[in-house]
Length: 327
Ligand code: ATP
Ligand code: FE2
Image (tube, rainbow, N blue to C red):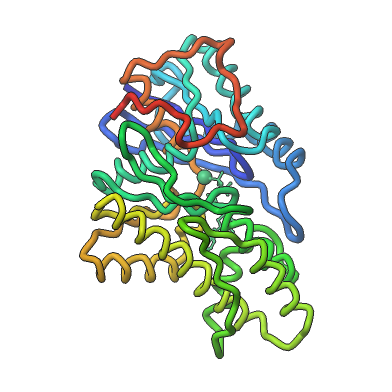
């Protein structure tokens, strides 16, 4: 079975094509970026509407397939920015109707986890899902993907983007912060904010803004110290989730998982507790269509069906609201 998956939860419009053996036949994307400032939802949606036809065709070409070869269309139904989700759902509906294919809407956060398991061989991991909008520690327990810890305010990626924006850089800011961190001279103490199993970045952001405005600290030192502090927070909570659930695997996912320093720190933590650390190729960490295609295959094979008039979007669906009947 071959599934074409459409991703559009935020700045990326992605199309992936996968078969049911777990082979990635294509994974193409076009992302909305800015020189200065963050994502404007309507502009990102305009970008997706403009690019969707082209990205679908590029994915088919890369896989050397036509729509005739595709058995199923899937799309990210939740969670995300309403404006952009609507474009992906619309494109999926058009393809399904035009070519007479079944259609499935899926949860994006769970797709990050499923593609990680499929491509790394992780069996029962704790997922540190660190992206722009989301920061969650997720594990499978008692028939559902449960959130063991999460951000109480903004996602870690959006936080890094805000720090970069304060320093005068455009979107995405995460890679810029990493680049700056490599030229650091010293560590600057910053507020460390873990509350139970949750983390928060709001207070830290205010503190860093003040430090930037004071002109007393270099961007390089601040970038380095920011990374060390927030990644330690994320891994502290991940480690506790692993201990609590007695799980021996950690999987990184989401755009921030591309960060080499986060990867190093995660590997070290796993080594210390004799656990395995699974890291994906960057193209599967960031938002991508392949993971949507794979999740579509899993759910279709488990019997999920969706009528066109049920193919809604749900910007606020939570990971633990999804019934997991494919495992
Ligand atoms: P989601 O819908 O899952 O929340 P998203 O729309 O935020 O995802 P992703 O592609 O998963 O999209 O992640 C984008 C985020 O990842 C941005 O905030 C970006 O700054 C961050 N990012 C990308 N590369 C790096 C890196 N090397 N280091 C740190 N952050 C990074
Ligand atoms: Fe994502």
